[in-house]
Image (cartoon, rainbow, N blue to C red; front, side, top):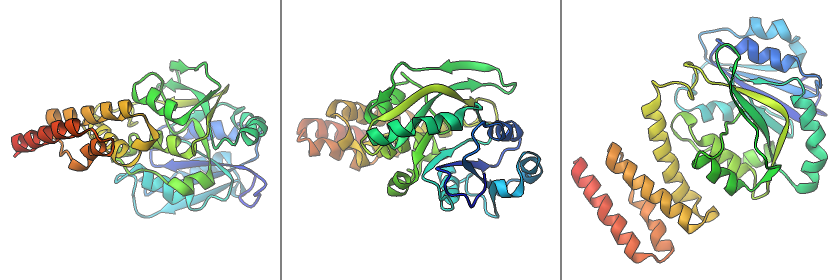
Length: 306
């Protein structure tokens, strides 16, 4: 496994900032029984030096390390993801959180899936995952019954909390990433779900239950942090706006009209600034009465907020 061996089809990308569980993450990568991957580590101007830990598990030729002087993850995690991805050469990419882990057969399972992936023109593979705590104990095990899922169905199920998903348990094609990039939402909270929707490129998402990605839920993670709850609520509001103004054509009228209603209710309740562009969705569908009803609601929201 070397950075120059581009016969490897898989890049494992770790955006590094937090050192707390980083060694556990690296141990899981180093323990892969199939070594045909290239490891990329991007240091987002962390106060911690990850190299002593990296060099404990990997030889210098076994990874590519980028020591960035400017922190961009605090502005938006997606900027850090994209900065590292500029360097990736491999056909497929996993972005693994710096506190998450993968089972030792993860890479092997990926390669085993490739014939099916090629035959079905798949550009996103999703793997079963677990939530783990600070002590590596399993909080919850997610193992869904479907083997394939339409990208819009995946998104709706995640949006309605019928399934759980994060970025780490996905592998996607580099070329579709370059086509769509990441939506810049506060904390990148929801950016991963939109990415999987778009990176699927209107083909089914393949779901594999033969390995596990362990996603850590802790006070140091965005998912587990109550301190960030307000920002996560703001991110949900931004996600709704992006859905309606940019991606509504992918979904049914019923789903998006429900999103518009939720958007307006969030604006009213949390005093977020509602944009008129969202309700133009109704005009596109010639729902004039619904448009004027929503227009009136925005007017009163803005009036009350003044």
